[in-house]
Length: 239
Image (cartoon, helix red, strand yellow):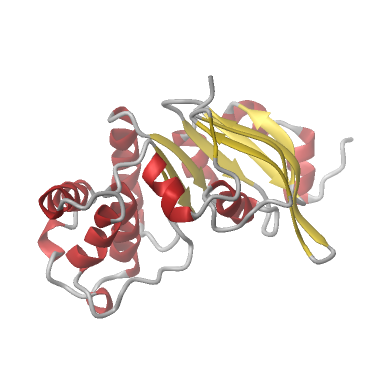
């Protein structure tokens, strides 16, 4: 049984249908990649899954519970959390305090929240930066803080929206190992990413969106050879 299953998911913005009648599933324990050209509906999909947006129609089941239309904090407490492309840390809080905001969203126990915060920071290599403020960190470290804040909620499903953007090659290499470690700790991962090398190396399965519709799904090798995917990215013909 999928950990998450969406059926007939649709969201319109005026005359634009950003996600159209989408069937989508995430299996427990996998690292799933969601790819597609700019404007394909990827971030809108994440927003629909996590309650940032409500669908016009369709269903989202998380571990058998209908969550479509629920508020983000309620979905977070059920165990599904996301990161965002645009980083908006609390500028007057230290990095540790920023991450603890995530932990406190899912527990009222301050000692437990502190424990979850410190564990997440250590995993993402932020332990020495606890007392620094966001404007003192690089984009790469702020990206890691965003992931650490999500992890501090103790999710079962972690949705990452372009986590590699802004990372230098050394940071990107280390982050791939961290993601595998997160998955091995029984946290399922779904990521949107434009760095195809990362997607092909890291993900066991890939879903491709184009104009809000799913045009391909399968292993990295099968998706890379799919004519519809090639056409969506390159404008190539089927010849």
